[in-house]
Amino acid sequence: MLSKVISAAYLALWISSCAVTSAVDQYMIRALQLMSETPLIDGHNDLPWQLRKQFNNELNKVDLYTLKTTHTNIPKIKEGRLGAQFWSAYVPCETQYKDAVRQTLEQIDVIHRMCEKYPETFMFATSSQDIIEAFNMNKTASLIGVEGGHSLDSSLGTLRTMYKLGVRYLTLTHSCNTPWADNWLVDTGSEPSQHNGLSPFGKQLIVEMNRLGMLIDLAHVTVAVMNQVLNMSKAPVIFSHSSAYSVCPNKRNVPDDVLMRVNNTGGIVMVNFYNDYVTCSSTATVSDVADHFDHIKKVAGAGIVGFGGDYDGVTRLPAGLEDVSKVPKVVAELLRRGWTDKEVKAALGDNLLRVLREAEKVTHTHTFFLLLFFGAFSQKTEPLVLLSFFLLLTWWPQQCKAKEHKADQSKAVTQLYVYRGAFKYSNVKGLDFCYAS
Image (cartoon, rainbow, N blue to C red; front, side, top):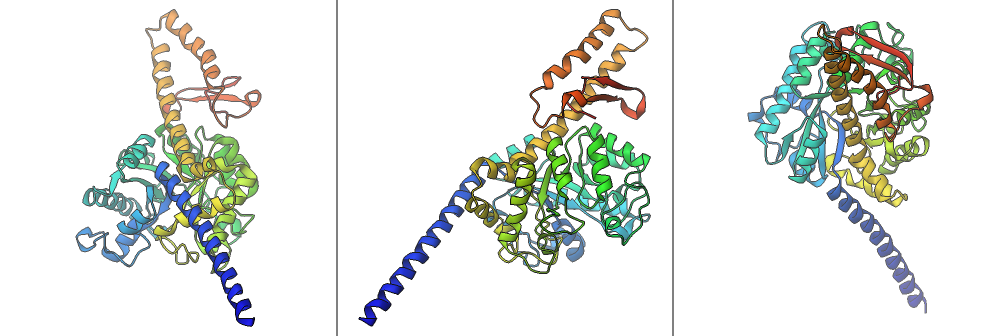
């Protein structure tokens, strides 16, 4: 009799175990299916820094198929279904006022050379369309983000040059103040504020980034800078590798009031996997990372969340997320928690694609109105041309009514910036060129 009871108990445990395993497998199967339909776009990976630190950027000395000393290599990228990656062109704060520009250019160069060495895996990308094309070719779209405004040496010319080299976002600071922006350590009290957020040059830089179509990355800045940029940027912003402050109260994370403003302006917060920003401790799990996704979704909606693992830039990662091959586990966990296919696809890549497209629209709109302005106000102005210009100012906002995340029209104040401040058309209610001030 006892043996029958024991056998029945083992059978029940086995059935229970099979049921749990089956459920987990189903979530993973579904996760991989969604990742085959929508590119996983990660906001921040420091593999280029590891190439510099370990190999002095000598790619002939490293094989990304067999590399074992990093979180990222080609087999791990394939297993992790990485559709697109913003590779970080990072150099330390110690290079500020010294050779930061040169070192950053070397990091941009190594990203280009990495793509050239492994064309079967990487496709260099600079646009939302490039990401889709690479995904359709089963390649990882490779974009560049410069991590830290110190890399510019306070030069708009350097910013423009880096844009031409393919840089598509700039993190305004790293963990040091620049001559024009305060970094997140100011909010901890460990460093003094130098600018109360952004200096006048810092604000000029934001306008120029909008004009270029370069994404503004607010990871690493103070809350004051976050709010100042959200007030003035004509394009949505990103947090390339930051998590939710309410879940882990580290000043590198994003507070709830800012999350709501990111939603109102159509931006994105890409969740960081670093244990210290996930649990504010040295250990974390996949479930802890999913808690940040859940919180951001609860506060501001699934439309602003994304992935920003910070692989190869951190020393501690959650159990189960030890390298880039493990990212599908997060997707499966979100599905287990009841996220819909649409919400998961938004987090995977649709949100970032939307943000990038909006930034591209801003630069195209700026160029269009710039050309129109100089045509309308030249010495050879024809009355019909001038009339057409002002009729367009009236017509254009009507085309923007359907724009997602559009600010309340009644509060809109138009500001039309012409490059280098030649002209500013402001305080005209109802005309917001699709982007409220």
